[in-house]
Length: 473
Ligand SMILES: O=c1ccn([C@@H]2O[C@H](COP(=O)(O)OP(=O)(O)O[C@H]3O[C@H](CO)[C@@H](O)[C@H](O)[C@H]3O)[C@@H](O)[C@H]2O)c(=O)[nH]1
Image (tube, rainbow, N blue to C red; front, side, top):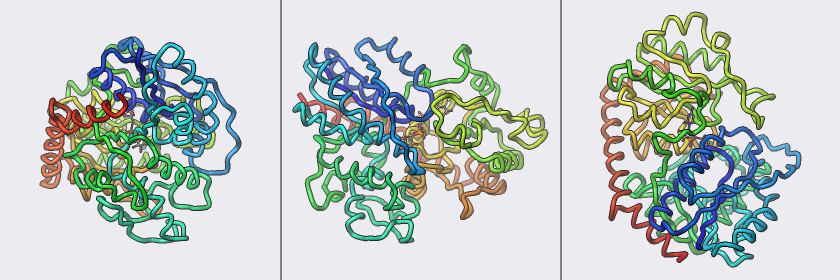
């Protein structure tokens, strides 16, 4: 029996889309089996267990294999990505072993790895397997990634000391400070890991990206024409998205026992397109001062809101593998806030079923940290955004969403990253009721139609998927 092996990183924001890729491959090749290798999470990046259990029970052709745990060396790098790279590097013997063991009963056709798993491309090569990377973010950031070795070669300075606009093929000029934090300092271990990763990506059998032609035409054209790897060949690029979690999939809800989560029942009672949804991905959290400021802004805005709150980051909890305790809302929010806004607002602790929320008719806008899954989920639901980036490539995504795609407004912060209550109030109002709100809503709806067309028979993503499948057959 033929099989494909997927190797995601153990973070919900990366897992869902690669599993969806596996399901998509299955719909076109139902006789295949999909094997997914799961490494133990080195930090808490959102609960994956309920999602994995749900997929296992609904899709028998997908089997999850848990890899043994490895001991990570101590690190002084402030970036959590360093832990992921270490985990992947140390897991190579386990990946090799798993591939051998699956090969005993299956004809393994390809290994598809999350782009963070660049160290494992050598394992695929050693076994004569084509190794592909799955890029979980958009084409603009893909271009930036595989162009990064060129940026590195063209200067001896760290980006943090450059204060310049970076020109990446197919992408609007990006302030160097908007690059992901691990790319800013050459002396950091995370920088070294990413440089190695971005060089290795270009050596793969192909890169599959979670985006679609009509969303990012300029960026996709530039990378496909080879402009982002000027000194060597570019592997084939397959834009097969949008791949997002299904509406009814349980992706890590806090209230697993509830038939209908409370926030959805609450949304049923709200007028059409009246609610602003605020949610910041699997890792996003704010200081107490910032939480209180957001609350003041929401209160002044007079808009309806549904707000997911997580505990502020702390030494103790920020990278802990175990689940965090629920936030204490009375402590974190201004006194009386919940009571004063109870007619038009709901605060949810830690986690909400985001896809279902975004697709609820009462939701009219989304304040997001710009994680790419959240962006695609908003596009597919036709909900315009306010972009409030927090970590990873999200500042970069904000530039793309606001400047290039024009489907989001920018939440502007002060130099130290703090966002004032008046900015929250202003952007909320703008998103929900002004001219600019309407124009980004119309563009988002057009992108929603574009996403549907890309995924339908003869659409660009379907064509790309067929080409990808033919490449390993
Ligand atoms: O309360 C919550 C919070 C999150 N989610 C889901 O969790 C996923 C979060 O993914 P994403 O929006 O991409 O954010 P991150 O988890 O932060 O994702 C990481 O991975 C993405 C893909 O590479 C990057 O774009 C991000 O910057 C990076 O932080 C989405 O499917 C959300 O629907 C929920 O369902 N409920």
